[in-house]
Length: 128
Image (cartoon, rainbow, N blue to C red; front, side, top):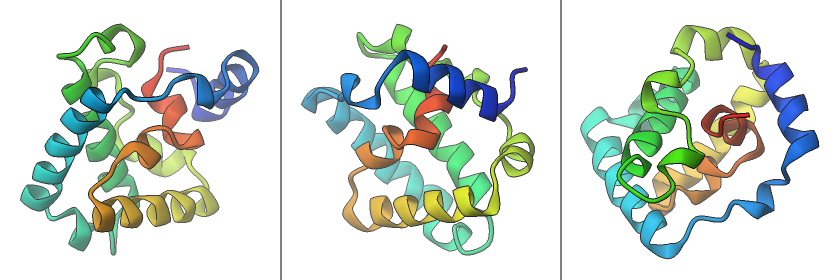
């Protein structure tokens, strides 16, 4: 398994994030799935103690929702998402804090596009 850092560097050189916007129908599908799962799994409470777990669950849920769309080949399969322990080890404290802010905003607004297209999670969701 390649490290997150090497994936970031390779992907940054290959593809700017702005080239992969989510179409409204895809975003709506993801938002419905994510908002439902966030309530079921109580991400808001879990985010207080474990950003890596919420990030993993967020990426897994987004990937799962997108597998039923025409974008399925542009995202990694849910089972290819790095496990929580790997995310926890490979992301710095600053990166976890940054993702925590974006996750809190997504939870508050019910719109998950920012976390999906965030520069850090972007490289975890897209195969390079």
